[in-house]
Image (cartoon, rainbow over all chains, first blue to last red; front, side):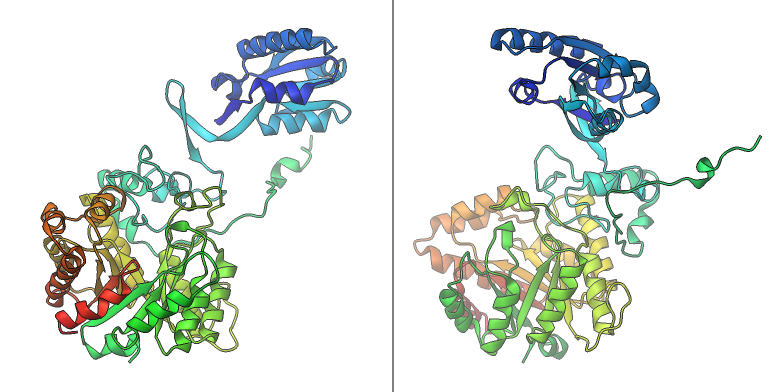
Amino acid sequence: MIILTRKGLDEIEEMIKGCGSLLVLGCETCSAMCFTGGQRQVEELASLIRMKKTMSGDEGEVVEDAIARQCEIEFIEPIADKIKGCNAVLSLACGAGVQTLAKVFPDTRIFPALNTKFIGRAVERGVWAEVCMACGDCILGRTAGICPVTRCAKGLLNGPCGGASGGKCEVSKDRPCAWQEIYHAMKRLNMLHYLKEKPQVKDWPIHPDKVVREDLMTVEST
Amino acid sequence: MGLKQALESGKFVVTAEVAPGKGTDVSHLLEDAAILKDRVDAVNVTDLQSSVMRLGSLAFSHLLTDMGIDPVYQLTCRDRNRLALQSDLLSAWALGIKNVLALTGDHPCLGDHPEARPVFELDSVSLLETIGKLNSGSDMAGNELKGKPDFLSGAVVNPGADNEAALDLQIMKMEKKIEAGARFFQTQGVYDLDIFEKFIKRVEGLDTKILGGIILLKSVGMARFMNKNVAGVFVPESLIQEMKDAKDKVQASMNIAGRLIKGMKDLCDGVHIMPLGWESKIPPILDEVGL
């Protein structure tokens, strides 16, 4: 899922200063799973903002809501009137959610309350790790399910650099060398021969990238 | 004699290295290079070593050719995408540089501009392949070159990888580098000849030349620092004690380097000496070991 963290209250306050009425809008998928944008975090943040607004005399009502996915128009539409009824929205979603709102409501200021960090997973309670860079050409089948593009600090495709020490990466002692992890996994899965493959070079997509599925674009005949 | 001829001659090859500094003043570096001239077969020029921004290896390698020294142009994948790497290689050849050491490079976060965006679009293996392509007259995209280089490519290997997985991976990568065109290897600094011998036995039969790495040990503090912080470098306690007990630390350092070089004579094809500012100590060390 997409891993998010919340911006500091000072930054949020600065952003929304003088914006008028505000909808604090949660997102119940990735953001809720990260404890950054579920119903509870919406309530907490909205209360804090109301308090700050009262203290600073900044006018405008603060309302709150949460929808299943801010990145999908069909989930946004049911609350369109609520959004249009406010001067601004403080979104507790990822960058895709914020930009979808901005696209659908071009006359409303949309502020991000979160920072979108990466595609990752929870490794323990309160700890999330980056595991995928959405590079567009998955090689996990050749690397025993461990992504070197993401988990090797240099994104190396043809084996490790010489910088690992005690099984840890040269950039940080609390980060395992991804290639040593790949090696152990490959050994377990009897696929070490993959390490001897022809050198790989990654070709990078041009950003912003786009996926087009013509089979889904054609109108169904009746 | 240049590096290529030296490696082909079968003699015990000696290379050393100089490290450009921050700024445009190269006078000391040229003096260091002059000390090494006629005593070594080639001089490596490091490429922003430790990810610290400095004068570039391409320019200083060229200055060495002006002095009649055969440079080994160190080129890392840290700061350049495939366009820049290929272009710099063509530029290097046009400036008279004939040897390249292909390196992945340290991560920028270890250097003095830690916020820099790392590139690593290619790595040491794919860079070696790319050099091979340029040598054969085309670029990575398959476009024909008008005038082609004929680089001698080298690479590095870390014989002191500190666990079985790391060493297996180093050797697998070494084999890939050879397949990709590495004709010689310069190793990470070696202080324990037993470990080095075990490594050499494991890579016996590989079609390449190996120059054992010698880092001049300048102090007890440096030994401890490297043991803690430099991957694959292990200074045994006996050498640390020898440095501690020595009245003349410089002489002790030179003795240690001399013993390591003598030990390597039976194990590999040459040595690569990293003097870290003690370039003037290299000629007397070589005198002592008869090189």
